[in-house]
Length: 255
Image 1: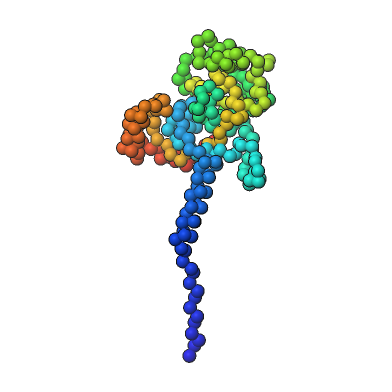
Image 2 (image 1 turned 135 degrees about the horizontal axis):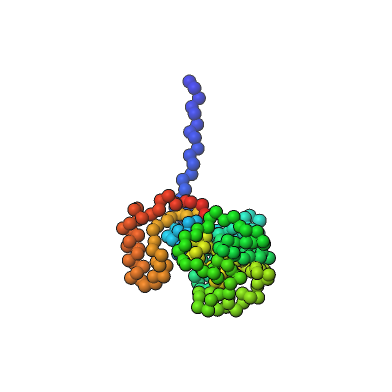
């Protein structure tokens, strides 16, 4: 007769306490990532079309442009902002408003526009992402910045009107230390550094990574503050989730 095989050792079953401990670990890790690493952000305006559309929902990397700190510093991909980066930041013109633009100039860069074309350090930029629709009438200040002074009645902030001359050298805007010059890709309508000045480094939140959901949204939706207005749009989203979601934009990388 053959030898009787020994029964295989059974894996010990996970106890309820161990399961709850594992679940708590997952939840804490997820909460840490959501709180400190990524942030959900909705594109509120058309200033970054066609790169980003109104109603695009993106995840923002909050860590990449932060200063390296502590023991975890070497483990994370920190870096400084580069020309061409798309960033989310707190608006210098409207407190508590999150804005998204593209970095055109970093500290030390010299910027000017001529007939709508951007020149950086004397070189005309090749910007295939730019959208010019003629949505607004010819604006000498906007298209020939900073050579043309801002008109008396305009949406240029009072502070920028006052401080802008201090940063003009030989017809260029000189970007100061710890500051950035940013513009929207939809140049005709973008409310950007031409109108409110530089982005302080401390205002930068992070870089949009990819679109996780995109929904057809009215231009002024972000201005709707009343509870009834928000509930009405929420009901619209529920009813039209499938037919007004832009499925082709899902998981699109932002660049």
